[in-house]
Image (cartoon, rainbow, N blue to C red; front, side, top):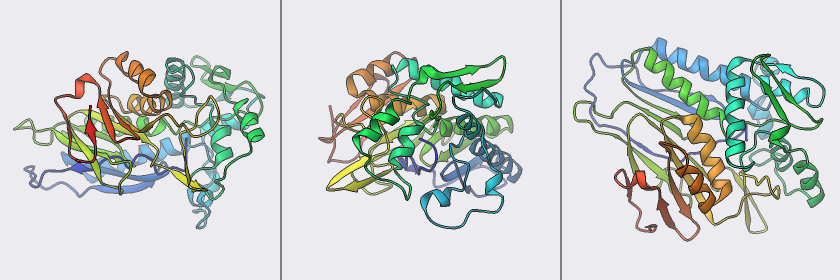
Length: 359
């Protein structure tokens, strides 16, 4: 669901008090992109030129993969469009504009992201669907236009959601939505791709230790302290608590940690919460007893897609999907404050909030 979203403020990153690198690297840098605040902290080998390269790439991905051609603040209903915003027409916007008409030539990186999106659509039997755009626009959750749609509106939007009607031709370099009114929205995967690109650039530049935090999509490069082999400590957001509060801690290195949950973007009406993860079965926010799902993998694009897929599938089917993917692990948080984890996390996940029970 892309953009706007201030998604996945899932984690607190616990950083070392003392850094041993010399000379002292530049301070961490932040920038608003991808519909959220992106933070990059290069702890070893960081230079201003590397920060510049990383954020340039993030902005490029934003322009290419955003589902909106206008300014983010316009969509939220506040602020004036930044100068030149009208020129930022993305690859996704172009494909959506030609839905049912013709295939559109797009960049190779977008081809790859769409292919990955289609793979997860197939793996999840459509619970993850990159053509969910009509539903996202209809509900407008997180924008000034958010509302509860009528049943007939939901049915009409659902009829336009079908990943099987997205054609991606790698050889021709094109994407095509077969039916008029269809629309791509790859917000559930593009931020993960951007995090992977940031890690790739940092590695190419010789950075040994870094934390990439794209609105809570966290990638940890290297070790917190290499000499002592100390991992980074990533806090998993308490879905019922304040931002920055956490239920437990993951100890990881060279991994990505991504969460999808009911607390990320939502509105309340008549005493009910309506969150942004929409079911491709009934067109409404997913309601299956889960508060959040956290995925741990080496690849952030996989963690991003899996967190949405698994949350939408629910515990049983979601866990089966995680178990089928080598190197993927998950933390499930339920409405009753129960927590379940997959086997690979037993040694690296610790509950820290007494209000939650691991079982």
